[in-house]
Length: 250
Ligand SMILES: [Zn+2]
Image 1 (cartoon, rainbow, N blue to C red):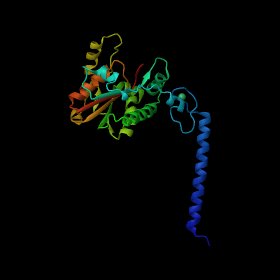
Image 2: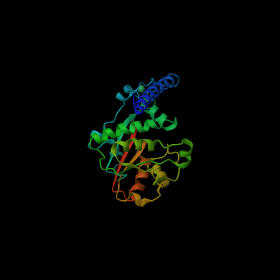
Image 3: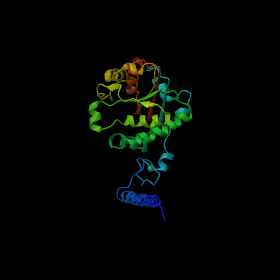
Image 4: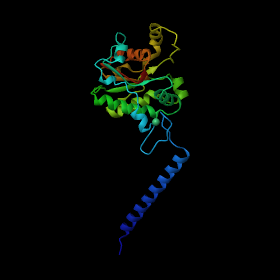
């Protein structure tokens, strides 16, 4: 006679199989009507691909700054901010794929692209032995009105992706943005720097004392925003300050 627990176990296994099958049909059904598209080229994503297709990942215009002794971003901050290292993952061009990805990440409700790119960026850095002693990753904060409108801070997603690989924590509360940055396009570098000076502040500066901090933003162009945020961190007593951004102009 068959033992009751064997019957139960068999019924459970069959049920599990049926559920798996039904779930896979449902996934196919939704994929057919709501296909997931690549954030870089709009191609349909295949199974195993998320956010970006393999071709786009393969063709990402990487800066290879991690191979430089002193890279152009570190030169950009020379004489402006005391940093222990800086790096950028990709180049972006007007109308190019990277700009499209960043636009979707920032304005189209797809911040997970930032996490995905953050993971890939951090792998590159760790492989090259860069920023290995980071304690905490700090995303450049958004002003609360912009945060409310957008619903998320894209740099927080980049930071989370990087932290996953670098095995450190993320802090998005201590560094705060007091003002949304004013339009800066027609101002000189000096004016821009003074303009953003009071934009950032620290809620509990003692948190940063003695820490090795990696400050993360989505894009670096003039460097003024990162410079202003970085100064606040240095004033709070960070022992080492690193800077990372996903992209810079080509
Ligand atoms: Zn693609």
